[in-house]
Length: 335
Image 1: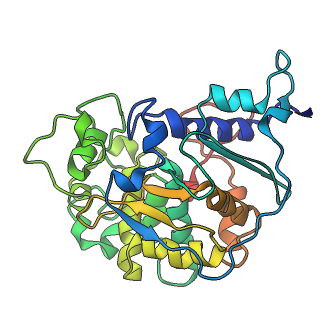
Image 2: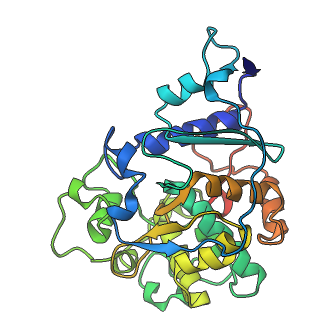
C-alpha cells in the first residue's frame, strides 16, 4: 500500500475543483450531470477543436491503482479510491515530475471521452490572449471598444483588455446561480445555457454577443477583483476579432495542435455565433493534463515563458475578498 502525506493547500483546491466538475448545478443537477458532463456535444451546439495530425505528446509513467494509494493523516485505511467515490469524481490524473502516477475513470468517462471543463476554460482563453499579445496581434493596454465598437455603450467602454483579463472592471454582473433574477440568469436566457432553469422574458437579448452589449457599470466594482464570468466571454470575442478566427480554431491552432493533443476537444456555443469562453470547453482528461504540464514546463515554446513567470510570481491581490490563511491569492489572466 503506497502512502502519500496530507496534500498541500494547492492540491486540496485541485481535488475540490475536480469534484465540483461533477456536482455543481450550472449545467444540470446531481446525479444526472455524471452523464451530461461527458456528453455535452449531444446537448449543446458545439464546434470542434482539432487535435494534432502528427504523433501526440507521449505521456509516460506507470500509474498506481487508486485503491492502492492510502491517504495519510486520516482515520486509517482511507484510500484515494475512497476519496474519488466520496467526492463523485468522474476521472482523475496525477502527474508528478513529468510521470503519470494516477489515471482512473468512472461512469461514462474513458481516456478518449471529453468532459466539461467548466471555468478552467477561462485559463485556456487567458493563455490564448498571452500568445496573441506576444505575437503582436493584441495590445492589452487598448480598450475593449477599440477592438469591439459594438461594446461602446456597455460597461466595457474605455476598459483595457488587461483589466478585463484580471476581472478588475467596474461592470455590473451578479453571478448568483441560486437567484432567478441575477445577471447569470439573464445570461442563461440570452444564450440558452440552462435556460430551462429561469423564467425568461421574450424581449430579452438573444445570443451571447447581444447580451454582452447590455452589461452596465457598477462603480463599486471598479479596479478591484470581482469574479464575473462574462469578462472571459468579452475577452473571447476580442480574441476572435483581432485574429479573424473563431475561438475553437484559435485554441486548435495556438495550443491543441502544437501541444500534441491526443484527442479532439470542442467548444460549446449559443447557436448564434457566440462561444462560451467562460466555461464551455470539453476535453479528454489526458489532454487536460497535457495542458497543465505544458504550463509547468515553461510553455515549451508554445506559451510565452514570460507570461508563465508572471503568473507564478504575483504578489497577491490586496482586494481579494476571501481570506485564505497562509496564502496570497490572485487571479491574473483567468489563472
